[in-house]
Length: 496
Ligand code: NAP
Image (cartoon, rainbow, N blue to C red; front, side, top):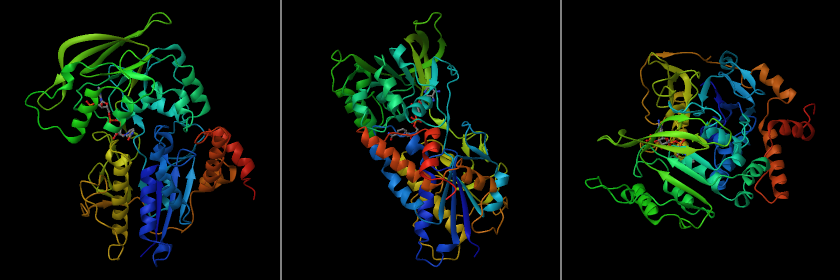
């Protein structure tokens, strides 16, 4: 059997879970061990994708998975190449562009774990200085290499979040948690300084549907209720009962209802900062202010549920005066990505295998995580999906072999679930035989110049960020690329 030499495009949680699963199913002690090579390419210079650049700083426990990822990266069969942007236009100027044509000849297998990186926009709310996607805020407070402009928190008092998912609540918490509480976490100093100067007094969180349809989870709602310095504006009592004739509430819905009935720990009127859940409201337009200091006027259509639980207009309208609108409506994959399906908003796959527009399997090309399933689910579901895709890759490559993959139930798995080999027809884009250790010469040159990072670079930066953080009494103090590059040039000179 020819060796399996896999390029993974993307270095986030799904990429690492697939790599880790493959490495552990072919352990170094096994006869097949030397037949596996994995090269992981990420357009960001640091690994871990959403775990580093998406998880809210006050959720440090979510980042524990990085221990497992670092363990996988310590296996000599896995190499990481950071700051390499494969196949699509990069929003980050310092990345090395690498075409698929340059990548493919070096690998027998390719996996896209490129996530969902593009925010869904609202048709009535084009981005402007008054309206930004939540992703800009998340990228600001995680110091993502795309470096969005910091929000003008010093000049504003009222923020409106559109969408009631967990990203929305993450952003609301960051805006309402006292900076002194955030200071011990992985919040970069320049971000803390902006938060310290913030004049935000109220955050409205708008949903087009009701409390039982809200996308946030109870843990995140409870955290809002427990904010030390803010209180929730009491809800209309109509939302605090179960409408007659409703189906039995799910566990999550019952817990949400209990939390909403109890309200916030701080009672209304006792805090300077407040927040509200504004259900059944859908933006229809925005009038921007004529003079500095005036508020924008957000037009809202009132909504109700139709028999299919979709939001439909009631005909009533209202206006909300606000300073900044943050849309938090979910994310989709990059539309220019290969095998992107515009009707799905992510890559077209069948059981983890990539499928072309004509329904043919693209042999030995796979996708996992949000690139394959769309932006849904928490890290555990990403892990289950990644494991299923890894198992599919191994079973496709070693069909006759005793590689111990454990079937994952359909309910647990996502993109990778379903084990049957579909349609016989397939197209080939990858070579069958390749050199064991080669990779594109542009990447080799990038490594020599210090533009492309490897995992040893990351280990050095990671230790230094933690050291700098400890000196400041916090989890870590992050570096931006320019600082990391300078640090690496002195800590790990390339001519050794
Ligand atoms: P999400 O969970 O899909 O929530 C999107 C929200 O936007 C929903 O409230 C949705 O309402 C609303 N929406 C979408 N289109 C809309 C429109 N045209 N008009 C008005 N509202 C609209 O997305 P997310 O918050 O980005 O989260 C993505 C995934 O990451 C989720 O699985 C989430 O749980 C996970 N995540 C988890 C954590 C955590 O565990 N702490 C943190 C962040 C993210 P409808 O339901 O009415 O469509």
